[in-house]
Length: 381
Image (tube, rainbow, N blue to C red):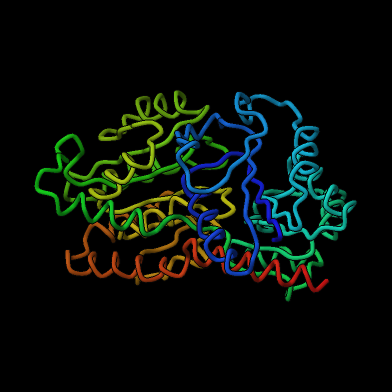
């Protein structure tokens, strides 16, 4: 039996869903699947997984290390683990961290197949010429790639990666879980939604202002409040990060009312916010994909998504399940929020149904299919 190892920085619920889907599909091809995570914790995503009870096999190189605060290089542990497992295929989540590059170098030295899992797109951030040259050179070490969407695939092509070696779909969540959970919460007469606002726009994001543009969200919401005749709408922001205190101060100083920062939420509680939300808003200016948009769509919500998000190309059908907007234009965001707020209930329901129809093509099974195609491609090289 062959062995595939899948490398991520830190495992959350959706990494597990992808791994389980891979196990189920690749078992039929006589390929075993193991997940390797660099660390047991991540500073801005405090996922709580009962790893011992999971049905998939996960190895943690440094259970007590916190990413990215602890800058420790775990490459020696990665090499030791790869020597122990001796995989036939390695699928690595990007190449930014030294541990991922070390794993790919190990694969090349031992004549094993390599798969890049990437959501990076060309306009994520400025890249100097010398860095682009180094990226092009390193990409030659990969036999195939699994990308999140069209933008990520085209970026790899511009770097010289063969188009026929690029497959989909990397950016997925456990749609089934979110659909069942939100439907149950909405239909359960005993569900207590009284602690949540009656009508609210929802945002879920790490609070890193340079990337997520939360001040733009707050300013857009404030302008929406000026325009809207209905004053009942509120804004709920789930997530945590280094800029939370600054953003809360910004909202207070600007006199922006009806905003709640509720912190990071584990998935089993996060679905409650999705279930009772009116509309989902994502204002990021530096977002390779944006899995929170997948979550909102699986929850059956209309969506407003920044045109700078990688998922906007694939997941937003303007007018059908929501709208894109320029995240640097506060007035445009406010107008989109106003437009959504003025739609009749029947049209909002149709938008939510459209969200679910679109996201049905972006699930763990599609991830597993893409990994299989990438393995088959790599095996032919």
